Amino acid sequence: MIKKIIILSAILSIFMAFTGRGTNVFGETSGDNYKLYCAQCHGLKGNGSGVNKADMSVAPRNHTDTIEMSRLKDSDIYEAIAHGGTAVGKSTLMPPWNGVMTDAEIKEMVAYLRELCHCKGE
Ligand code: HEC
Image (cartoon, rainbow, N blue to C red):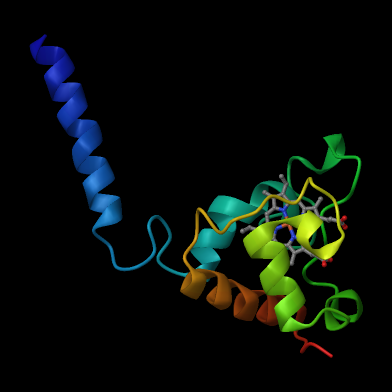
C-alpha cells in the first residue's frame, strides 16, 4: 500500500513539474513539441523520415523541402496541424493536434516549419 502511494505521488509530481512550465504542456519550444509530437512520422530533422515512415501508405511531408512547402500558405499549414490531414484534403494519417497544442503553440509551430523549409507561403 505504502509503495503504491509512493509511486503515485512520484507520478503526480512528475506530472506537476511538466504542467507548471508556462503555456506549453510538455515542450518549452516549438522544437521540443516537434520532437515530441511530429518527429515519429516527419523525422527529428523534419525531412519526412520518422520511424513510422516505413509502415505508412502515404509518406509524411518533408518539412525541409523548400519547393513543396512554399506551395502551402500559413493558413493551410495551420489547418493541417490543428485539424489533421483531412481538413486540407490530405491523408487521415496526419492527425489533428488542436486538442494537444494550444492555438498559440500551433501558430508557433507554423513559424517553426517555415524555419525548417527556409521558405515563405505563397
Ligand atoms: C502519425 C504520423 C504523423 C504525425 C505524428 C504527424 N504527421 Fe504531419 N503528416 C503525416 C502525413 C502522412 C502527412 C502527408 C499527408 C498527405 O500528403 O496526404 C502529413 C502532412 C503534414 C503537413 C502537410 C499538409 C499539406 O497540406 O501538405 C504538415 C504541415 C504536417 N504534417 C505537420 C505536422 C506537425 C506540425 C506535426 C506534429 C505536431 C505532425 N505533422 C505530426 C503524418 C504525421
